[in-house]
Length: 291
Image 1 (cartoon, rainbow, N blue to C red):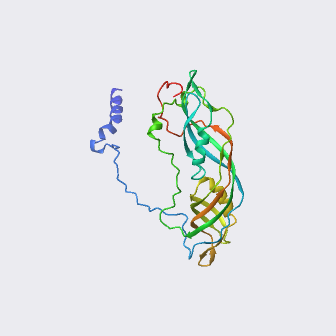
Image 2: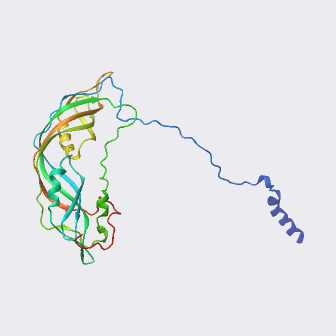
């Protein structure tokens, strides 16, 4: 019996005794440098055509009614007076000159924190009703997209905070129990104006010579619905392919003359989050009322 037990132990130990040190498998992560191939940027709007689309007729809509949004950040002190206003979004350039004084004259119920009236930077949204009376395309040139880098639309950056605005004592909106609010519904009027506006648009023109899709690359936001509605009636000489007219994209660079009528505010809303002068601005605790 003892001999049988000894034989069993030898059989069980044989695999372990047979394993050599140099035969032991060790899994070690070995980094292998992999050089990725450089892929040049390509323009998905570019296509091989014999000639790009060219504009034939470019009428602009008349008496185009719309709602135009304005965003602003107003500094309202502890007495409810608006002492400073910075516009963070405008429908087109040049409108702030006639709008600033109207906002500064607004009267507010001051914000309150811990039962005390405190100054705040108040984010506002103002909706204006009005219309674009008429316009004219003064210049327009069509070019074929380059097959290289794709186009980049213009971006609208927030204004850089003024050092004087950063020094104004203000309570963050997150620490306010009751935000400031207009004492009465404001009625703000902005006089109409006329000006020349450069634009840059990427348009897809079908084989029938009509716009199918539009990408705005450089154009004021307030003019885009008007231009989009107008371009539905534009006609082009379509791009020429090897077998005849084909659909193709084209850059449209030009200047439009715009005439806008008077704008009248339809309402003023207090927004939830402030975009100016910034989240870290005006964080002084317990600013004196009426600052």
